[in-house]
Image 1 (tube, rainbow, N blue to C red):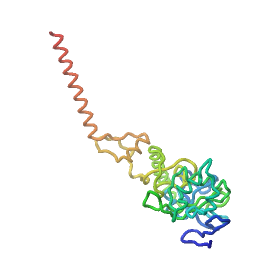
Image 2 (cartoon, rainbow, N blue to C red; image 1 turned 120 degrees about the vertical axis):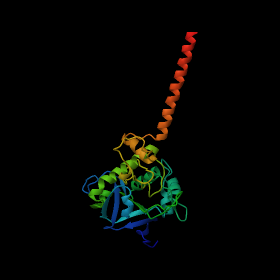
Image 3 (cartoon, one colour; image 1 turned 135 degrees about the vertical axis):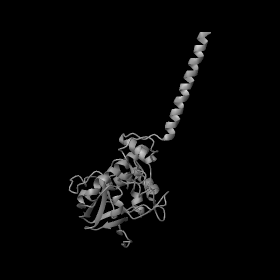
Image 4 (spheres, helix red, strand yellow; image 1 turned 90 degrees about the vertical axis):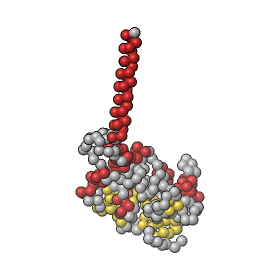
Amino acid sequence: MSGFSNGFFEKREIDGIHMYIIPAGTTLYRGDSNFTDINDSELLKEDYKFFTPDRNYADKYGIVFEFETTTDLNLVAMDDISDQFFKDAPESPVNIKKIMRENYGYGEKPQTRDSVQDKDKAMSKYICGKKYQGYAANTMKSKGFDDDLNAEVIICNPEKHLKPIRRVTEESKIQSKLYDLQLRKAEHDRVGPRKTERDRDGPPSMGALDFGDDDEDEDEGQPLSMGALDFGHDDEGEGEETPSVKRALDWRGGKTKKSKKKQSKKKQSKKKKTKTQKKRKSRKSKTNKK
């Protein structure tokens, strides 16, 4: 198979496996909610981590860091799975063949992507366990959503193949970014893990909004901005918050404002109760007199 770029990385067939070739010196990005310092020694210490060639895409998932590959990488092309790679995959204890068919579209022309976190993690672990250097996929059509899934790059043992270059996110924006991510995680914890669109949800190995670690994460919806919340007021009678703001307040332990409607119903209920009690006392009094 001849190599080609097609707006992504060059692709070749190596020992019957379709591979993307990422040369040394290639710039990749990563969004991370666990780190703010580019010099943190733990930044790349994982069995595998997610990266992207798209800086704007990385920004959706945390503090953006820029990296450079230090070695040439041959990554399994998961948007063009070779028959040989599929044939070699096991069906137990984890059915990797099934994951390739259902979540990466093996056998379809073109392949379509169904990103489900547990399945994607299992695929990443399988590839790294087989001593491949990782996998890559260009933008793919998504099953069940109108939006395409963004290009993804998983690198096994990233500490051996990348070096940190700089933190892209400005210092002044770090706290607001982390705050937004906390709100998204709180929402995820409330609704539980579910499959969402790629540009809303994390990449396969993303984890808890940290773009590649192994903690659970599937958030839903866009992050709430800091301006969307006001934690400093407990006044009643100012109307109801939107559901997302109310959930955020609940999560932070703040009091939520009761709607005028609910207060009115509560007052009416108390009045009815008082009237009923007065009637009962009146009847009892008359009975005693008799």
